[in-house]
Image (tube, rainbow, N blue to C red; front, side, top):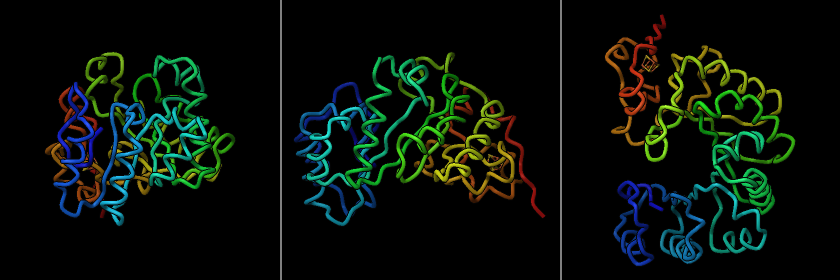
Length: 265
Ligand code: SF4
């Protein structure tokens, strides 16, 4: 678990006291994000959420989670009462056949989907995060329809290309897929999202790899800039100022030749 400006995760989770000490040192943060690992595995999460809510009542607070514990209604109710009002749930596929293979946890798809439903019905602003890599990119096409049918009322579907860190770094040979292969599926997912009325945003997908009609979906820069890079050719690109850039990890592992400057008149 970390807040938005805490150091990268370590092997050992910080204690309750360490997190509270860190929170006490924050000076008017723009946002506080609890992520992981999986924050809902912490027995003290309710206490920490309540602490954040009381200490920073006007600061947006977001929880990133796999959503599984929110499949229990009483847990959802307790967390909402503690102050959870914005959650981003990771979905790894539009079916158990994809999702549960990625998570390596049978039953996790059903639980995450139920968690999304419970959060939405509890009035929590719930975004669904779908990370693209070799095991998931083709299935993104079916995600808007799934959400339309099974979890109406989400805030937004966030489709993002993975950053090759943590477990992704360990398994990068099986997970890396070039943007040029991913792009057609992202575009089909965007069409499906429009058709189904599911709000969609694209994170970490440089505009030059997708067709012009889909570029307005890009959320721009969403991470601290030291994690991204702009290859030299970007200096000639008309979209440079609004572009999300390229993950440094991707540039190192795959290269940057596929990023071709967009020259607008
Ligand atoms: S060429 Fe560079 S700045 Fe332009 S869209 Fe591609 S990655 Fe972004």
